[in-house]
Amino acid sequence: MEYLLDKKVRLALIFGWLFIMCAIEFIIPLVKTYRSSIFKTVPNVIMTILLVVTNFIFASITLLISDWVEINQIGLLYQTDISNMYLKLSIGVIFLDFWAAYLPHRLMHKIPLLWRFHSVHHSDTMVDVTTAFRQHPLETALRIAFHLSGMIILGIPLIVLLTYLSISAFNAQIEHANIHISIKLDRFLQYFYVTPNMHKVHHSNYQPETDSNYSNIFSIWDRIFGTYKTRKDYKSIEYGLEYLNKNEASVKNLLIDIPIKTKANQKKKKEQ
Image 1 (cartoon, rainbow, N blue to C red):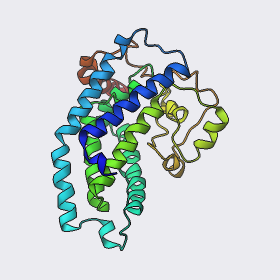
Image 2 (image 1 turned 120 degrees about the vertical axis):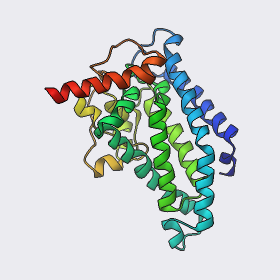
Image 3 (image 1 turned 30 degrees about the vertical axis):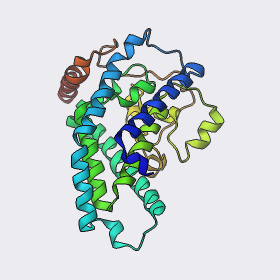
């Protein structure tokens, strides 16, 4: 696991996996892509670059907090006799999947101010592997805050956090990928894992479906908290947000216009 401490290695693994998922999408797509040319993916690619840059900006803070937690032995794991790194890793991944993924994701759907920025992710009218990192920088900052607070609460070593983040990045590409999966296999996997089909429901422009399936890796959180939804036909899901223009967004739209339009839509709903 130590190789994950190297930023270059983590980036190489993540982008290498991206190319693999793109190839799988081409071979076994769930639906025909709505992106008529490669240029339609440019906004998502630029948002991915911004996400990487934002994470690098906060990297030094992550290191400082990690050192502080270790030196002062802060967190629940330090109050136990657990010394096995693999057991710490298992506990850390499960805890972070709830604390740093399910919880903030659900909050972003329920708190109007947070939804304005998270709506950038949901505005994509074609959900595929490039959607995985279509994320507003302010949403990225919020997620990092939950990662760091989770590190403090549980007393997670840096390598455990980086391992979780790597697994999460790989899985984000899988669950957003436009790939066809056997229905029987998909139904079985959804008992414990967030499959691409399960996550596609979350990207539906039908609000009861949008406000469901918040889980990141383990689907158990949606089942425990009653936010799990499924459907028979995944190919007919309409993506995006009804109050936004269906055209592919520019980078300016993603960073500025969509949060503003979302705020206007929230105000309109409140007045009705």
